[in-house]
Length: 342
Figure (cartoon, rainbow, N blue to C red):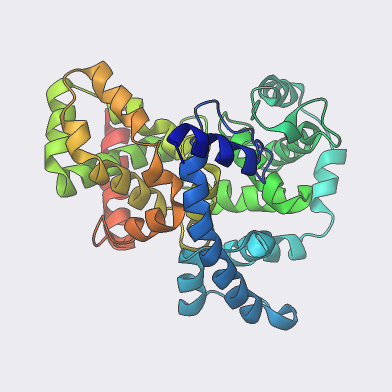
């Protein structure tokens, strides 16, 4: 069969809207996706059977070496919300605070917070059919509630751009407002160190930590950046603040988040280093600041990131050893340097 015919046939078989409600982009490679998904489906089926046995009889999920191994190999969609809630501590928080979420929504409002959230509602996933005003039910109202409640709960953060994308993904997976709120609280309040405060010190720190890790593990790339005077914030701030949402394919982001909820923020550095290391030669061919920026956009697209299962295997092998002690030490030194700069 000719390539054009193969493409046409694949386009007819692969739905235009993915299982999460996102419309496939115009340049979507239907044939490559179909080829990948036919093999990934076998993996998913095998994983689903293993997870079903693990969770049989409504057993709770506790962190363990088995759960860690299972999570790294992917949580099936039907179990994802339950496992995220358990391993992140969100379920425990929700159980200890019955009715708290609804009290937040019924409490005193902040017009400034409400306006900031409303401004971003229409900008959140315009390519997702479930977030459109014409959708029934329209998830914009759910998103508004989750972000408003969180802003009232954590007044030090309030609302920050980027949180809309994260809350949106949580809603798509949990299909539950209150669970989405508690998962957002787990991420913003505990898992991500100070990413969304007005000063964004944690975000700035982690960008510097990545720069240090690249110097250690990929010195040629670090030299290229320094030679052109490129700030890392220009290249990777959205990777961190959006947790790869709207940067990597949906299924790949969800696989990263499986590990994020279970193992913490270290996974973000593993993903970033894997993307850079895999495309090191391509990045090193850049000849200007604009060229570097463009190449960093290109490395988040294509077969390597679409094939989420092999991508995640690379994430745990390519960057080599990366202990939490190393991350903590680098965070402390980078944070101190940023504070000294004022």
